[in-house]
Length: 262
Image (tube, rainbow, N blue to C red; front, side):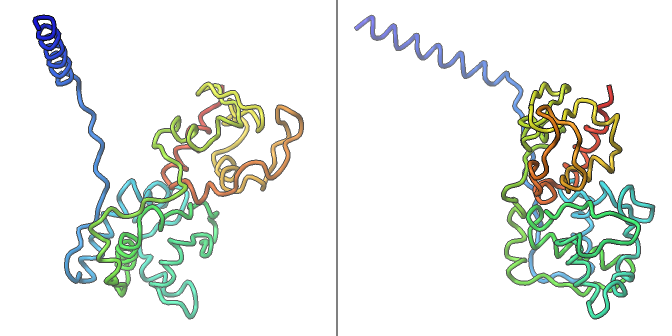
C-alpha cells in the first residue's frame, strides 16, 4: 500500500514538474488566416477599400511586382488602371478585363512586359477577395461596377483561398524544399545534392533574374546544356509552378537563386 502511494506521489510530482517547465518555454503563435469582414450589402467605395487591403497584403503579393503611382519593378504601374481597362479589350467591360487579368494573367499581357504573374490568385484569395480586389483596381481612375454575389459574401467572413496543390513555405529554403527542387538539383547553399537537373549552386552567375524566372515558369523554353548525366532532356521539370507558386514565393525563389554566384 505504501509502495503504491509512494509511486503515485512520485508520478504526480513529475507531471507537475513537467507542466511547470512547459510554462517557461516561449510559445510560438501562428498568425490567424486573413479574413474578409463582410456583413450586409457594401457600396462600391466600401468594397474598394476592402480591396485595397487585399492589394497591399503579402497574401496577394501584388506589390511584389506592380507599382501604384510609380513604375513597377517587373510589371505595369496600376495607377489609372480603372480607366485604361475600359479600352484594353474591345467589347469587354473594364470589370471583365480586370477579372480576366487576375485569374488568367497571360490572357492580357501589357506590351513591353512578359507573362510572369502566377495563375494562382483565385486559389490563393478566393472569390470574395478577388471581387474586392477588382473593385479597388476599378477605383483607380474608373467607376466601381463590380458587386459581391450573395454566394461570395456568404463566404467572405470565412478564410478565403486555401489553394490545393500549392507549394508551402515563405522562406527560400522552405520553398526550395517543398517545391521539390532539392530532389533534382544540386544546390550547395541548402545542402541539396540532386543529380537529375543542372547544378544550381552558382546559377546566379550565369543567368539573369528574368532568365531564372522564365526557367521556373516555362522550363522548356531554354534547355540547359549540361546535366549530371549529360545533355539535359526536355520535359523533366514540372511546368505548373506558375500555378503552384504565389507571386511572393516566385520572387523569393528568383531572388535566392539569383544570389547564388560563388
